[in-house]
Image (cartoon, rainbow, N blue to C red):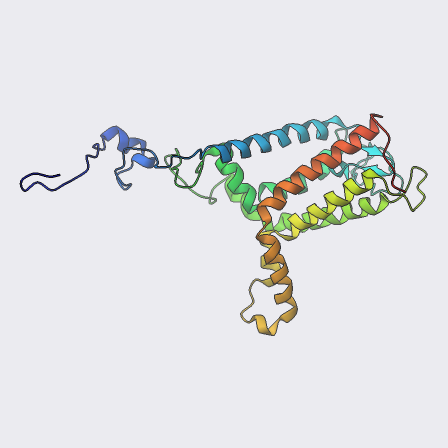
Length: 284
């Protein structure tokens, strides 16, 4: 209780000159709150988990991309290596071997194709949020201020390159189409006769379904389908498609993680078959 004529106030520490120089949460334009944030939950678990998950995938995909081996076990091909664009590719009967880079490319052929799905994911609106928070703490979580003094957004290098996401979307659709073709070829046996279905076929089928769901749930896809329309009533087909894509878009984050895990699982399954760890279980 206040006494006399003194108003009842909360004691707030003064902002020093050093605080002003640091900027960020100590900038004089911010509320003078002594704590860096008022959250009492384990807010750090989400960004830490995101960083750990993405780091694990980066380590695994880097190993497999530079391995340049064990990516084809007839009739299955790893999604990391399809389509094969160099002469040093393992011959894949019926597979998309387009030797447009000739013999001069001496590195792993995966490095020629992974740039497209990788670019699509790096510039994805969800993944930006994920790794901005997980790796750069920008910001680390809702209602937790970031530690950086300044923020320029995506207006300068290198983050301005995020704006090419819509163009990577077209390449992502092409890659998804090629992976669909690979999945169809998975319905063959070792002698390339049709009518086969093994566990590998199912693995590739689930993977390509998740890849398509993630790709079509993209914000750029949603804009391409229904953006720039003034009257939905005049474009019933595009409106219906926009509605379907919007439903997928609401699950974009979940589909991003599911497809990231599935593509790693599909590659690892082909790797196990190619190294002779076990034979592909056959359903028929």
